[in-house]
Length: 163
Picture: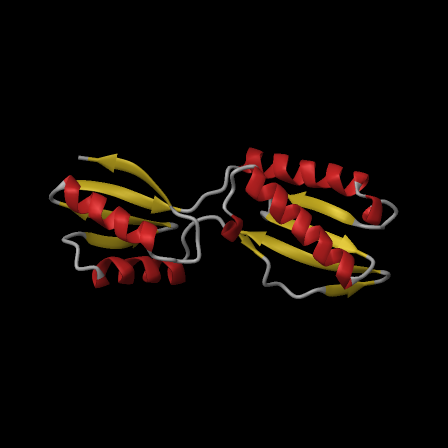
């Protein structure tokens, strides 16, 4: 049986490079030069903390970060900007979660997209990835083509292709 795995991973070094470049840009931008706060990467929790004096500058920080992440080759959908802003003293803070792995909800979307396409493959969740198996490699390639066309809302990588 041929198989492959569907994962969603962000290279931690590339993410760190993107955050460092965003921090440098923050220091050189004229409109943000004397602001308090900044951009911090928490590697253990896989989050990025943005902090600034007001919501408008916080939005500018989001734009800088997103631009740098995309320039480093990381898909922008791997960052979850849905968290609410929180006032902490004189600063406004926002925690951005970096999506790592395929969780159950996205796994269901992936499996449903494959089943709706009526490709002769079997897909099943395994921890933080989806394993797809078939008798022929052509069927696996058809499943990959279906998933590339479908908007899951998560950057997907196809790894461990075995025949």
